Length: 116
Length: 116
DNA sequence: TGCATATTCAACCATTTGGTTGACGATCCT
DNA sequence: AGGATCGTCAACCAAATGGTTGAATATGCA
Image 1 (cartoon, rainbow over the protein chains, first blue to last red):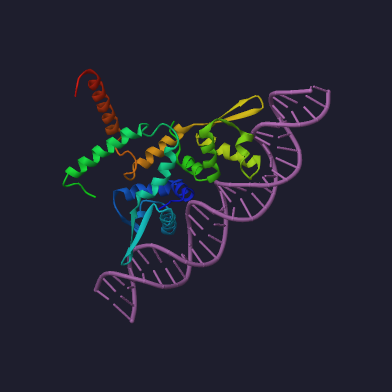
Image 2 (cartoon, chains in turn yellow, brown, purple, red):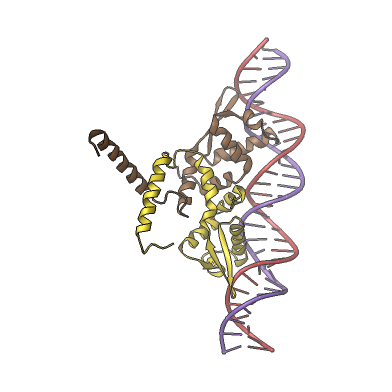
């Protein structure tokens, strides 16, 4: 999944699309329901969803008449990794960060009711 | 520094601009030197630099004839923070990571004082 | 002073983007 | 079968984007 940074970043550059992603963070949604809070036409939203899907940021699955849209947060990974090359806003001490993640993982393992 | 996600992400969406940022990661550069490795005109590069500056990703300082371009990695912070809302590929809980670091630091301190 | 260098400005052009509307295919429900 | 709902397609449009060239401005240097 070598996401193309061009299309990922340009997909993220539009506020409508970022809002859609934020909505999908809550739950999977049908196209019509995604469109509901916006002023623009269903066609416009459908195009936005196409762009998000093209970037790999969402997936769409047709069940009956309804197409369900699902967030695919992994697609942001390459963009995030690229950005990590810049600046000090990311954990500077990667070794410490690894130990931190290991600790969290151990916690997750011990938590029997943890989802995913 | 409430960077505008629209202009930050769309600035990052262009491969030429990302390449420029990567070059500036090495060192500050004059406009002419930034333009040198690219096929396009100096004017085009100048426009790209304008867009990067508008997004806050670089700053430009004129010294004599030469305008020096400097990476401003902080501008990526808001974009990075926004992305952290999605997915598990970013430090999910930065606060927890900070507490973890403090904890490690405390361990180191006590290790120097006493035998663990 | 006069020329070379560094950078931007202004005008222009082709392509892409984000939106619209109207028609269409597919599916569900009586 | 027939009507309502879900979503896309096709054609179109205005504005933004990414590039060009030629001229202009500002600075350094002999």
